[in-house]
Structure formats: structure tokens, C-alpha cells
Length: 259
Length: 298
Ligand SMILES: Nc1ncnc2c1ncn2[C@@H]1O[C@H](COP(=O)(O)OP(=O)(O)OP(=O)(O)O)[C@@H](O)[C@H]1O
Ligand SMILES: [Mg+2]
Image (tube, rainbow over all chains, first blue to last red; front, side):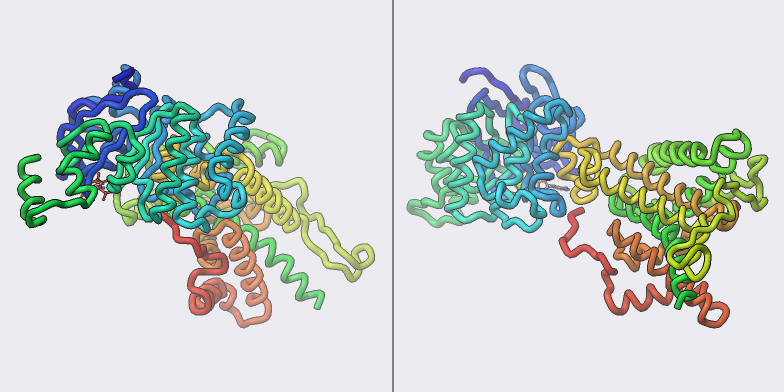
């Protein structure tokens, strides 16, 4: 692995008494696309929220470019170059598309205004529909367009690393692939490191370089995506390719062994 | 007919006052989903500050006016920081009760301040007793308005333009809108949500104070003058609670209806006119005139 830009060491986060992640460790190397796969409630969103400072971990550390950043203010973390595209888009529905993009650049200095304008032009290049809708309220966009807006808005923060929470949620397979193609382009053309959490393992494993599998708050497997794609467990549980056996009992047994 | 127009004109002036206080309610409601029942009392404080500025400090009227707005801006911000922020995460009911308490406290403390006290004061203005006639020839046959009313309307209009520019064309103003639409997303963008909410309280307090300073020359400055907030509340409801233009239009409607009712209807109708308008509005259009159609995310 080349330079590690982001590293989680034994991170534990909870919501009141509910432990959502229980000792998660993972590494993201600079310039790569890393995915964390997991079912509903596995703790994927919690990992991202912990990195971006929305929730504070009880234990463990989040190290970014060699410095611990856990328990810092979310605004400070954005300024360090970590942008979060939250689950469910979370756009500002009554602001126009353009105003939403400007809010993505909120942490940047006022003097960068010209650069910001130029970058807005660049994200319109990735998603031309946003340019057409620039002056419409963002709440009027379709789900897929809102996802494009959410990604673009995060890009306006000029991130070093982008955290994406289930970008495929609610999108057609075709649109999902289009979005992931763009995510790869953003990674290649702008050198933005990507950490994407997904339930859609098929797509995530196709586009990412390295993958982790999260089960009930714990990492149970990790490998380059090319290796993960071939693993029996992953094939069966996440890619839906099953071989012999009664699926229900096998699944239950396997889960047992993973805990 | 002229008489009717005359009444409408003074109703509009009165309505501007309601509209400004309603605007204060709405700003805070949109940003923090709290209803600030001390809004009328912030207005009252504005009136007293104007009094101190002109009489005790001897400032020219407009300088005192601006100074009072500035002081109230900081007062509102301090109120948020010291009283309301520690309540973050408490049930809405608790927060509302606290604002009611703040109102009581403000009224009580004002009466203890020498020079302010429980007396009724007159705020001296340079345009006292001047009149403006519109249309007609000279003072004959035209619409006659007192300068106080004209100033109310003009200053309100100016303030609205200023707020429009702030919310539409400055980054911090757009961020205030963004924060009120989706607070969580604002956190994700690195918008300093708490500081923004503090600023909203400050602006709301300053807008209310402005209403107080405009109202004072027409009526009086008194510790209980803030009860007029009880009529601004219906104005906010009529406009569709949560809409800034709605608050103003609601205020104007209530001001005009009330003035007309006071003249044409039997004694007593003036005071309940505002509530009748609200009841009618709630029956006809429960979301108010400018009620938002897009779902607001919390
Ligand atoms: N705000 C909250 N309050 C209490 N518990 C929560 C909260 N958010 C998440 N949890 C719990 O934490 C655990 C992990 O949730 P998380 O949102 O991280 O899962 P996820 O992997 O993102 O799931 P999904 O695929 O459904 O988005 C779940 O058991 C969930 O019930
Ligand atoms: Mg999630």
C-alpha cells in the first residue's frame, strides 16, 4: 500500500446505549477508491459520521494525514479537506442548485470566489443537467439529480478525500453505474481519494480498488476488490450468487463465525 | 372614499409594525423551530434604548435609532448564546417557557431602571407633527398622512430591501437559509450552525427593536408596550408561519382590517379583528398565505 491518508484504529461509536460500531480499523491510501460494504444497520453511516466529526467516538482514533482528528469540530474537519456526501443527499430544498453548490464552498475563503466560480463550471461539466437547472430550487430535482448535486456540492469544498454514503440509494442500475463512472473520473482527474460505503456490493466492488466488509459494527473481511469479488461468502451474501445448500441456514451459520 | 383610503394608509403603517414583529418571530422559528414569546419585549427594549439615546445621551434621533438597533443585535446574540444555546436538545415546550420567562424578566427589569421605570414616555422625533399630502392640490383634497406613518412605511420598506439583499445575495445570508432548511446538511458543509443561529437571534431582535422605535413616536414607550406582539403573532400565522414575505403581508392585512374595523364597526371589534382574520384564514387556507409547499426537513 502506498501512503495512508486516513486510518481508523479500533474506533467505537454509539448512539446513547446503542453501540453502532465496535472497534473498526481500516486504512485508506492516498489516491485510491476504497469501499465498505455492509447490510442495513451494519454501521456504515456511523463510520463516515465519525470521520467527519458529526459524532464523537467513545474509543479509538481517526488519523488523517498523520494527525488524530477524532472529536474535532465538523467545520474544522471540512476545512482539512474531508467532504461528506451524506446518505439520502440532504440537499437544501428551497435553495437553488447554484446556491447549494455555493454552500458546498462555505468553508473556503471569500477571496477564492473566482476559483469557486470556475469549479462550479467544472462540476457542470460532470453533470450537465445541473447547469440546466442551476436556478431552480433543488427540491424540484429528481432523486438521481439530487445525488449528483450532493456529490458536486461536496466537490466544491475542494476535498482531498470524499466520503460517500450509499450513492446508489434509490437509483436505477443504469444511473448507479453513471454515478460511479463519474466518481472514478473525479478520483482520476482530480486526485480525490474516495471512501464509499455501499450495500450495492456488485457496483462497489466493480469500481473500488480495495474493500472492507462490515457486519454488525465489525470489519469481518478485507481485500482488494478483485479478490473480494471471488470470495464465496461475498458472492453469496452480497452478490446474490449462491451455490448448493439451504440459503437461510448457511447464512446464519456464516454470520455466527464472523462475529 | 378618501376617508377609506386615509384609513387604509394608516392601517398599512400599523401593519408594518405588526409585520416587523412577525418577521422577528418567523426568523427565529425558521432557524430554530422555536417560538420566541419575548419578541414583543425585545421591541419594547428597542423603544427604551431609543429613549436613552436621544434624551439621556443627547444623540440625534437617527443616530440613536441606529445605535439602538446595533445594541439590540448584540443583545439578541447574547440572549441566544447565554440563555438558549444551553437548552439545545431540550423539548420545544421548555424553550418556549423560557422565552416567556425572558419576556417577564425584561418587563420587570425595565421598571427597575431609573429614568425608564413604569412611566409612559414620549420618544421625541424630528418629524413630529409634520404631515405629508399625496395627490390633490397642496393640502386640499389629497390623501393626508402624518410623517410618523410615512416614516414607518419607508423604514420598513428599506429594512425589507436590506434583508432581501442579505438573504439572497450574501454568502452568510444564504447560509442562514440553508441552516434553517436542513441543519444537518449545514453541519456537513462546515457551516458554523451555532454561530449562524446566534446571528439570526441578533437580527430578529434588531428587527423587533426597529418596530419599537417606529411605533414609539405614534404611541408611547412603556414597559408593557411589547404586548402588541400578541397581534403580530396572528400576522405570522396569516402569512403562513415560516414565510418571511408572508409575515409582512400578514401584518399589513391585520393592520388594515383592524383599522377599518375600528372605524366602521361597533366598539370592541378593533381588538378582536386580528383574531377573526386568523380564524377565517385557518378555515380557508390552513397553511396561511405563503405556507411552504416543499417539505421541510428537520
Ligand atoms: N440516531 C441514531 N440513534 C440511535 N441509534 C442509531 C442512530 N443512527 C443509527 N443508529 C443505530 O446504529 C446502528 C448502525 O447504524 P448506521 O446508520 O451506521 O447503519 P448503516 O450501515 O448506515 O445502515 P443503512 O444501510 O440502513 O444506512 C444501527 O443499529 C442503528 O439502529
Ligand atoms: Mg447508512
